[in-house]
Image 1 (tube, rainbow, N blue to C red):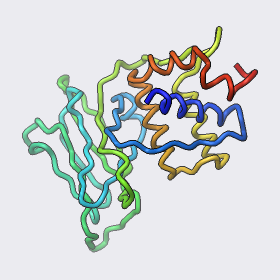
Image 2: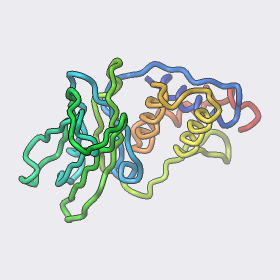
Image 3: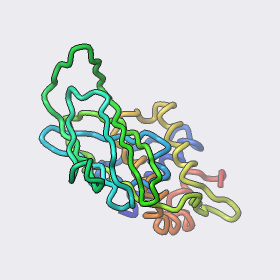
Length: 226
């Protein structure tokens, strides 16, 4: 697990510094844990598989779900762990269905899911998800939204006087896609983004710091750049 995580970061960084680098890793199943501050500022990707339910869970926060909207309901249905009107719903379950036709409605291969919540201080938040119907091997069980202190910018030391952030790694990923080292729909892209979310949530920070400081992965790739 340590080797996999560090290799993903290294690959994304290498896209910035080394034009000939490539990205290749296997996909693992599990929940994608995303910090609340991250989740409200970008649309998160969710895949729904036939015969399975994909989960979006707010149990790790003090928020309850108040409103849910699926932009294209022709192929998706949702349920919650308790009635929305109860003010105690914490989890949404997404399931795919056979296509339905609604007069005048439009459809999309990737539809948006909007979720509005309220926390214990009566503060409302709006989350947006891009939902895709997939037929391949399940890559994730769902998403768990977690409370992470805002303004906590994670940095990693890679050499004396130089650090990188999760944003640096994310930039490397974008460049890798632009330069066609990988594609946006490649499973490894999901894996790198999942890694970034975990990094920002401080889950893998200690592990990555150890590897970066020892230069086990970056030195052969970055050479004189660091």
